[in-house]
Length: 224
Image (cartoon, rainbow, N blue to C red; front, side, top):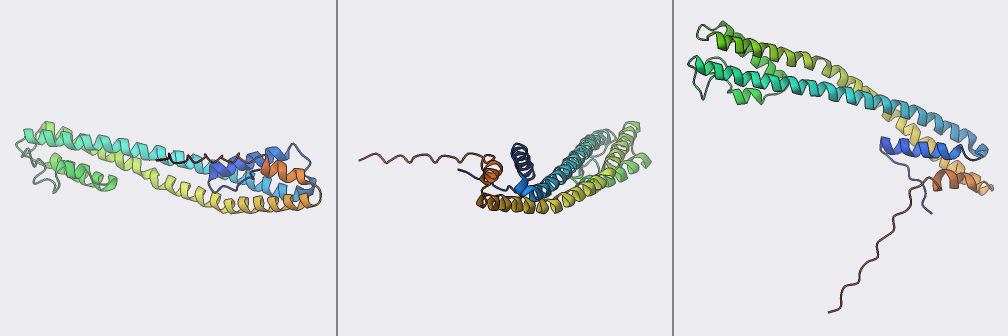
């Protein structure tokens, strides 16, 4: 009969812990009471901390999505400005010549922070330039707004990244305790079996185990 493995991933640990504790509720566990309680406490704490990790991860992903969406708007504003500058007589192949060192596509491919910085500088030059007409200046103002939105979206990102890393650290510290207390419960259950309480080990570590996969029979090679 298969026996319960001790998983290393959070989802597996929670699943195993729930299975063990559920099985324990259905039997007499007095011989392993102290070890069972230690594991139950560790599991409860681990489950809580894993929930905090999941929440922080979701928040971080949400803020990253906001930054990415703001960057899309910024990219579009960069190309919109390039089109307007062509109407003011700037080169179609190099619309930012004299205003920025990068082409529109090069600027749009920069990292979030660097792109916002260079886009802001470009927009301010366009607004101050006597060569640029109202359409270009309006496009530059739109780019300023888009770049500011990227900067604003980036502000909480470092905070949520720190929250996520902190949650991971706390959870991983308790993961060791979870693994250790489960191993101690396993040993105590095996010792209890030697004293005539074999039902405990069977219930906690055998009935909760996934069935062993059957090996497929090898097909013999056809005769020549």
